Amino acid sequence: MSDEQKISQRYRELSREEPPPRLDDAILAASRRAVQTRPAPLVVPSGRLRWYFPLAAAAVIVLAVAVTIHVERQRSDLEVAEAPASPPPPAREAQDNLYVPDPKPAPAPAPARPPASDAGELGAKRDAERLADLQKSQQAPAAPPAAPPPAASAPAPAQDAVSGMRESRRADEAAPQARMEARSAMRQQATIGAASAFAAASPEQWLQGIDDLKRQGRHDEAERELAEFRKRYPDYRIPEAILEKFEKR
Amino acid sequence: MEAPDEELMLAYGQGDAGAFETLYKRHRGPLYRFMVRALKHRSAAEELFQEVWIRVIESRSRYAPQARFTTWLYTIAHNLLVDHWRKKGLSLASLDAEDVAVESANPARRAEGREALARLLQAIEALPPAQREAFLLHEESGLTVAEIAAATGTNEEAAKSRLRYAMAKLKAVVDE
Image 1 (tube, rainbow over the protein chains, first blue to last red):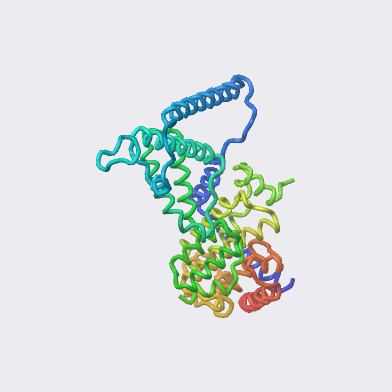
Image 2: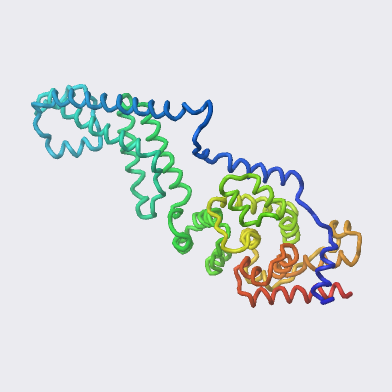
């Protein structure tokens, strides 16, 4: 018997410890939970459930037609009101992009144009914005936004603040479902952004980003990113040169 | 015939919870002993053992069998061990070099009841972490030298050398 075999044999005589049942239970429960949260596979219903799909499809078609008719009617009403209006000055246009005033006529300054035409313009603008938002909110669940790259992530909060203001302005106008979808899409984007600024990058780029943070002295951020990286790529071999930097702190 | 680990992991990725259970039952003992013997404190070992499986669960949809499942599993375990040692202030260089001081009055060894085995366990605990890890990977998970190298992110020569040093130290104890 070789030395190696002898050592192996001796090693096998040591107690064969096993994980305690509470660990087994916790891990197996986590494994089951993880697959239960997956979306259910798309299967063709049979038997008593056969009527689900046609009914759902009919409901979707009816809803889509109703929304289209409603939007078209509103648009034609607004076009009638807008007919005598003159095109707005560019400065006003820029202001309107940031803030949508109430439809009530403003009492204080003497308006350059008649209030009726002003209201018509604003209404048309609001309508266009509403349509754009409706389209956006309909697209949101189908294609959830990917995590933004580091360079592009900076102006996002400002844009969100502006769209947030618009959202609250239009709270009474927009359909509650569309509003909820838009908010949930924004929350989702914020969550992805908060998880890691580099999550969308390749592992190498992510590590480069972590290395850069370390060099910039942003140790806590670097540690957080490293932990996040480990979760995303648990089997990835991180170069020792990078790990050593984390030791020297 | 039993389904291979890789197939089970892919099945789990597709939502088959039973496949994970089979996989877990196959590997729970060796991985647990690997962790308990690689680390000094049982609570830390149990925490890392659990964390390895959580990472496996989280990676289910990204798993692609490029190597044996066992190698992949112990790569995750190795990465978590390295992080643990790093947090404890142990440098990567020292993992290879330093023997570890072990108290002789270890209750686990007393429970072993047999002096020779107690000495062997003590000698394993005293190995430098990298050598101890190589030895445990070899004994508990049955990894080859090439697989140990892959799991620990080193070259085959280094893995072979760690295993040889570990064996030489343990042989001296077994021969006593």
